[in-house]
Amino acid sequence: MLISAHLWLSSALMDARLAIDTGVLVLYFVVIIGIGLFMGRRERNLEDFALGARQIPWWAVLASIIAAETSAGTFFGTPGEGFAKRNFTYIQLAFGTILARILVSYIFIKPYYDYKVYSIYEYLTARFGVATKNAASAVFMFTRVLASGARLYVAAIALVLAYEMIRGRTPGQTETFLIYIGATTAIVILTAIYTTLGGIKAVVWTDFIQASIMIGSALAALCLLYFAIPGGLQKITELHGGFHFSDFITTGLDPAKSGWDRIKGMFAIEYTIFAGLIGSTFMTMSTHGTDQDMVQRMLTAPDVRRSRRSLVLSGLADIPIALTFLSIGLLLWVYYQVHPDSTLPKSPNDTFCHFILYQMPVGLRGLLLAGIFATAMGSLSTAINALATSFTRDWYEHYINPQSTPEQSLRAVRWATVWFSVLMILVASTTSYLVIVHPDVRIIPIVLGIYGYTYGSVLGIFLAGMLTKRRGNSRGNIIAMIVGFIVVSILSGLPNSIAGLFGGRFYQQPEWLPVMEFPWWICFGTIVTFFVAILFRTGRETTPGNHAKELTAGSAPIS
Image (cartoon, rainbow, N blue to C red; front, top):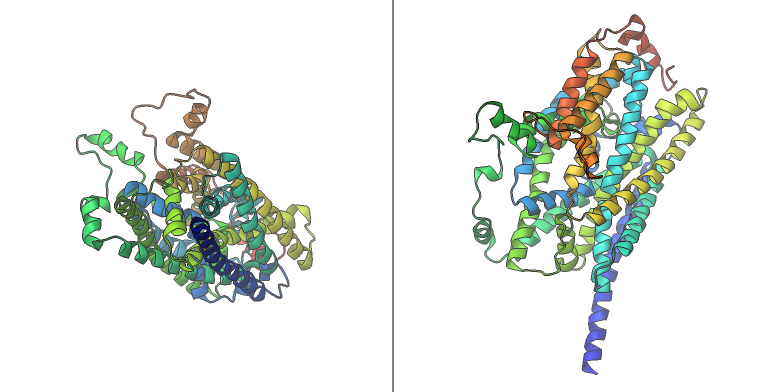
């Protein structure tokens, strides 16, 4: 009798805690969707939907940039890096993001404002012609769907582990896969509601709320972890073995070797100071200068000066944010050394979520779960809005309905939002299946690696257009983009990786040529693409001035 009463009481307490956490989550979803629909009301045309009439304050744009680049992959992946590596070397990649944003703000932003573009790939029409624009826009849409879909599944980790906690058992692979599909579908539908109806204004203002929740919940988790470790900093230092310069900065240079043999090993290490200052600079220039997802929100600021301010300050914010999430990962490792847990997940990516569900106080746990969904929805809303805008401006108004009215374009961009949402679900489901089958896969290399194969080619073409006046044309640009992709594929070992899935090898990698890690892919892709592109001369019919009037005339498509 007493045992039955005890079990009943335990069950009732668990139900009460779950009810509180669920209430926090439901309140979050209601507030976010409500704010999104309210702030994005009265959309009249594509300019309102895509640019918010360029009337959004710079500080809201700043928060939106932070929310967009801090995905659920960052929320779990960065602590996963700290937990697995037990150091802060990942922070080196943040150094290059600051330098890159300064370069982007003074090389890219002003031409976009001067030409009054909705889709940034319209600039390439003015500089080189329609074919280059089509190639860059297609690469963006393909890459963005894969990358955003791949990191979308991460938010579902929380629901999978919550299901395990409630049921008291680990779900099987099929059961887990179905939970992932259900969770990603729900997140996409909720996000698509306010994104489809509210446009970029809904995206930016909900991003502002989501960024605040994300940062607040991460700081709360950091404090809770620190005070849960008996002995505090002394215990942390003792278990870690002390903190050294190499825990923050590494060169990757092999002191036992000389010449090229000493240098080439540096390219095979993910996080080094050179990857941070050089590789990460090119990575960020590509994502924040030539990716419609990121740039579109910058173009909602009233002018160039305020757009630059929001971009540069977002780079400065990256370092403390990255340090916070890496510290969470390191403290998680220390915590579970002091408090061993036999149920700890095998994947480092799941560790933070496991701690949230099993160790967080009721209510605060709901806030942390809201933070997880905030990061997922923030990055997702910007992605599908940018994809829909690029599709409508670059393809619908050019080829599907060249005589479209403002009302038809607005209808088209909303339907495009719906269909891109469906594609996101398909990619997220595929990624979930792969991660379930291979639980040791780390998130950050996957998400950043997807960009690495293609964004170097796009950045190289944009730089050829902005840094030269008479070099490059559509034919040469497409050749350059293909060459850049091939070079990156070889440097990354992609052909052999694909052949390895079938138990074979495509070719023998030369001894002198290292297989490079993802921070370097965009760098070399950009350099190769740029120098191949400028071998070709720009024709008179595609010099920048000839298309400028058409671009600045309004929303009429360029043909």
